[in-house]
Image (cartoon, rainbow, N blue to C red; front, side, top):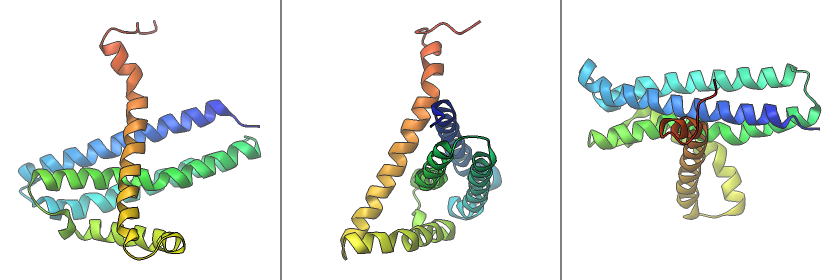
Length: 177
């Protein structure tokens, strides 16, 4: 019915993608202003759209691979559901890096057009769902909860991906020969 090994592999790949997107964007946004002499906000307006494009293409490729594979319908539907549920947290990883870089530079990320566009697009997608359940002032609370959820999911996936390596590094587990 379900290929659990493939689902675990895809979750592991998701964790790696989240961590790589965060780290690459964080390095670019923290180191870029010193190397390129650009403001972190201007750099975020260049880095975030590129990151969204790469992540979006990656999601499409993995989804297409899942749909054309010889897996069962249940596995394909599970992969589709995982892609839909984890797309927003995955897209949040470079935004989280930009927020952190702006905080380190003591700048407000709200000045970034890419960040504002991301927030507007997500708001346009989420708002009708939230509006049907909540009203008025609770929307900002739901936005904050989404940010926490996206960061938490990404952190857990990154830790899950890195945990075997950390255990080997600390000598807790012998590496396979």
